[in-house]
Length: 526
Ligand SMILES: CC1=C(/C=C/C(C)=C/C=C/C(C)=C/C=O)C(C)(C)CCC1
Ligand SMILES: [Fe+2]
Image (tube, rainbow, N blue to C red):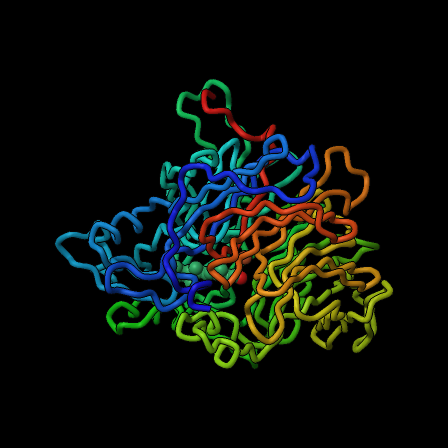
């Protein structure tokens, strides 16, 4: 297990040709580009948490039936600073670093008390975002890093905070039909207020501009005030339908005062996050046209969630699916001390990820009877009107034991059937991937001995008519060092193997990524 998680991985910046077995579809041309932590030890210093590791990008290029692999560490300021010093110099989620004041570029870190919000890391290890024609490595801080998808080189550092007053932003943006990015971020104690901002990064900028930057044209779409100035909710993603933005304020919160003193107290950012099981989880629905929040108060019981699956509208209801937990054991599980050889003993989740469907009636009749269920669609999800007019929602459980959900993004915000995800049960390490039908509840699975698959990415066949017409890609890592990893290509309809591309390198377990179709790749000369 140590080899899967904690061991540093070598980068392979030059293309490595894979051995293709089986038959890859001829239309599959482009690149699967993924991100995740790849280095957890620097000199004698070790990170505590798997989410702390230095970002290692990797890509699989599909070209005329051949597959090429590359990997390269993101040359973030954090990476450069750490490597130069040969020790951890910059704090990450689960590790607080104590830099050498003379050498470090993060001099600001020493004025933690005067700056409530410290300078965060630019080790963007979670996902890849497309903005305009460019690609960025993303994490959850105010920094993202532009990258060259072809060479995996690291380019500019973008500070969201220069364009919008956010200190944190999600690594799971959405894209509208025009290719604009919609993302959310938290603005902490700015002008005496803490709020969640939804912002839009346009996909193109006016032709005449010399230095084209879509960030200069970033617009705040709307803002949702945090229920608490010093305890904003943590969130990893948000939902979107044709007409609404869905934002869930969960009782898993950041404690800003704890964060401001964390450095002095010698504790990590992770220790400043707390789940309050007795609190409520509030749902916010923002009308995308009027930019106003639906005024009715909707809530459910305390939960912790990271990933929205999809959301849509039907007959005056908003339906949204999330992968939720009843506690925050997931983040605790990924401490590297738990992911050792005996991880099956140590790394037990106390809450299993469940795919929950909430069905929320938008037009709540003022005269509706108190205690009545206002859901009129065929679902076991309920939305009960309370005396004070608020609506208490309870979900339908669609299935248990899935995480890292992906859909056919063409169906994002629309009524849909299929979720592609990893199978996760009581242990956070995926052993299988699955295709789940939200309507029939059928689940197809793929798994093989000693195979650890990553988040499955759906790629539609060009001109596909059906939701599952395409392939599913996943990187499969093995524990046996003699057994090479591979990129698996499944037929998305039947979930059977079409082929695999075996790469003779040591591959890292990653987090998220995107497929870039050939036509969306800028050529070197552009
Ligand atoms: C550095 C840093 C953070 C990092 C969070 C990370 C790295 C989260 C990763 C989450 C993942 C991978 C979830 C998967 O489901 C916070 C807490 C936002 C705030 C303080 C600074
Ligand atoms: Fe995620």
